[in-house]
Length: 283
Image (cartoon, rainbow, N blue to C red; front, side):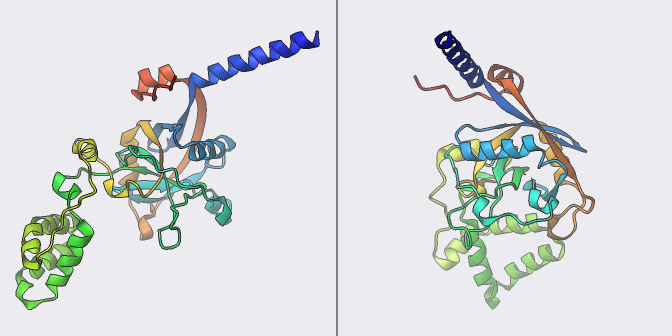
């Protein structure tokens, strides 16, 4: 009798395990601007497990989008701010940076402290961001923009480049930062000739260029932060949140809250409805 019960229990466990493998978590992020649906990657198991636990427990509910930048990203999920505490240092998550998980629009990634205090790129145990992003030209993708900006700053200190300085000053007075960026790119060849340097990046492969050729995003974040999921429905909600009126530190003037819902959905249904293709299991 006992042996029969044990065998029956094992059969049930195997059946449940097979069932679970055919399903995945679908996250719904509710906001006053609409809902976003997101999936989380199996390739980043630590981040996936942590996010699901926080969402299921309700700790994410009534947190805010506390930093939003149009054309860049929206950041939220600071459960410790809601609970009146500080994030424990020991709770941070080891980086799970996977090649091929790009910061395209809708990418769900973990916030973290900067490299100076966090050289291992440990992720926050709760805060996350969703990429809003913008379109990047091939010239922007293949230019070392930090080196370009530093070189231009060096040149503008000299009288012989006064006409170039004046162009930047006029744009700065108008707070036309996009125009300043465009002027810098247009000046690239001139800067290279004047200083005898190359401002090309050599670390951008063709795959990355192809990915961002027709997608908005934030490519400069690739390889620096853990991307652990993506929004599969509701990309327009990101735009709406990113466009709200902001005060200091890019914090919305009026608090913008979020709540979360987690459900198990057949993978086939997720693929059919949202177009996400799961990696084929190795045999």
